Amino acid sequence: MQCIKYNYLNDEFEGNLYDAKNGDDRVLIVIQGLKGLELPEKYASLFCDKGYSSLAMSYYGGEGQKKDIRAIPLDQFQTACDELKKRGFKRIGIYGNSKGGGMALLAASVVSDISLVIAASAFGHIMQGTGKESEDSCKAMVSFRGQDFPYVKKGKLFSDFLKRCIREKNIRLLYFFDEWDKKGTEENEIPVEKINGDILFLTSTHDESVPAKRDAELLVKRLNRSSFKHGYKHINSETGSHNLGYYPVNNNMLPREKKYPKECQKAREETLAIILDTLDKWKV
Image (cartoon, rainbow, N blue to C red; front, side, top):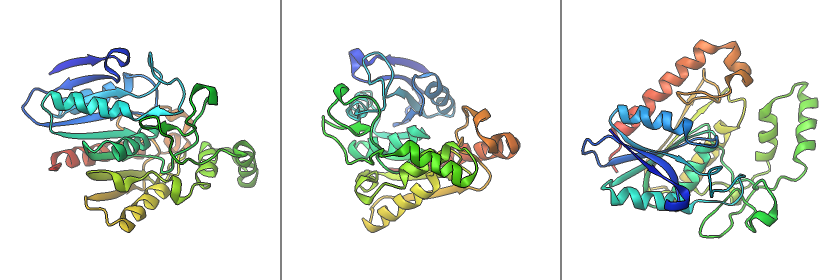
């Protein structure tokens, strides 16, 4: 195994390539929802040990990168793919969890070199970005070649969240994102029909952070309407939590993880097996 490091200021993308050096022409870009490379590196190393070269990539928060989720340039994924092709890789996939799952779908929608997307616990709409307008004229969470995307406006999001908490007599992170997501329309859904390869949606019925199951069903319907020419599948877990990734984060904030830790861990192991099987059967 060989590790090659890339710096955003020098290479226009931030990441560490774990090259399995086994002659396989497949490589998997790995992204997560958190800033930094620590978590993506864990997955990249894991996949590399299984025989799949992987690029652990960070798309915001690093030196020279956007500090907030506002107008994050998807161009950096094209730059990364160009570098991977120079290194001899012919099949490029992308895998992400949570916010990284939605970003994986968005990246693949504009970068035609990506021929496999594995999105776990992902959002389905393009949201309004955080940060000030003075930081970037694009208002959506992502941009491509300097162009904005249609996005779901925040509106009176916090008051909507409080009303939901009062109505439900409970306080849950899901309410915040659920109320925001429900304002979405077909116009600001992630344009998954533009993806040039197979798509795997991984969700949980008991996701307490993001309405990922509902959004995956929404995006599958979008693919159906567009007569999508590639393969796509939605696999939903009835036992897991939002943390379907093999290396979970912030489990102490998820009631289901506290109540059913063994079931959630088993769901993660089952999800990893599904991902490895998908990689093994990846032909495009």
